[in-house]
Image (tube, rainbow, N blue to C red; front, side, top):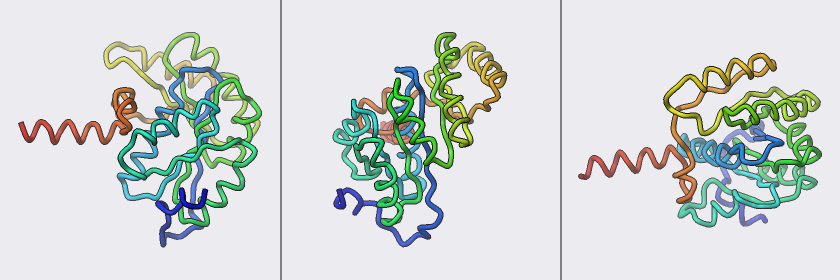
Length: 207
């Protein structure tokens, strides 16, 4: 375990570490995709970042195994070990820790939300997803942690995004800003969408 944290050791002020929990009680909402792209964006911005994967499927860890870079660090763990692992991350200089949670697991999601500074609620802009999101919003409220919704796999054209944002606003949840990248193709290659955009730009410049 300690070897995993060697990649995030830093001389930064350890008192400023922030924790984000990415939560959705509905499967297929894109929690892991959002968590890993945030982590990659943080690393590319010069921040020491780690991901704690508490989903038994360990999709985030599988992504890291495909990756040709140690950063961001990804650690698989049970929810009961979150306090211990967060403390380890803090001691090793992490500036940001992102917790990737499992669907259909209220106790684990609640534990993550209570330890987080911010909850991101993953949601697709579909009727079923928007109806199901209320359970997750309630968990964040129970944890007394600020929550923002993140719309995932939103069609570029049409008014679906605006409609979904209005529904979320009626639930009392604001929508986090999104850069418009479709994240999935990058994830399949062990990259983040920001890295895919950079790779595409480099390829076009070389052609």
